Image 1 (cartoon, rainbow, N blue to C red):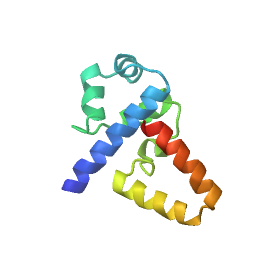
Image 2 (tube, one colour; image 1 turned 60 degrees about the vertical axis):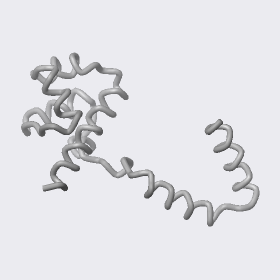
Image 3 (tube, rainbow, N blue to C red; image 1 turned 45 degrees about the vertical axis):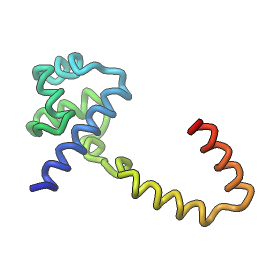
Length: 109
């Protein structure tokens, strides 16, 4: 059951991400797919799922194929990201590591 809630949250994050990318408000998206704004809010928070019809409408409104609504691969936990970064750094040259270090320290200042 925990997996179901995690999927709802990932789906909600993905919808919000695509909505923001398209510069669409929750109100506008709700209008575009024919639901109340509160429904978009609940979906984005992972509080509920939606119908197949709404998924199709979301796909059209957000200008992506339906499967893109379920593309969660980029939403990784920070531990997984750190592990991947460490693996990438293992393959980097000394010059690349120095450049990456400068970039990271500038970002984190």
